[in-house]
Amino acid sequence: MAKIKGNIVVDIERCKGCELCMAECPTGTIAMSKEVNHKGYSYAYAARPDLCIGCANCAIVCPDGVITVYKIKI
Image (tube, rainbow, N blue to C red):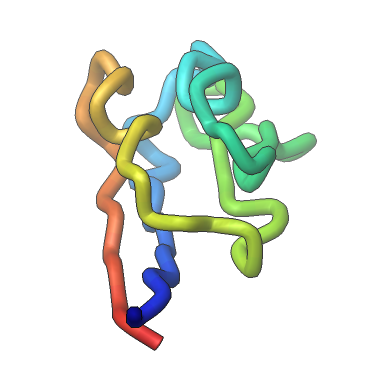
């Protein structure tokens, strides 16, 4: 059976740092940046992308739809 590897892309300029994605990530892939976007919010990013399983929980709970999840079979 093929394993699934995931990757997320966050639109950092639209992210408002609500941390819902971070709370829903079962693997701890997502963290909040110490830097801020042009609106002054810390934004989510894939701190440990090697752990992402492509479950898309983060994209589902994101109220602004700023997370795109990609999945590949390995």
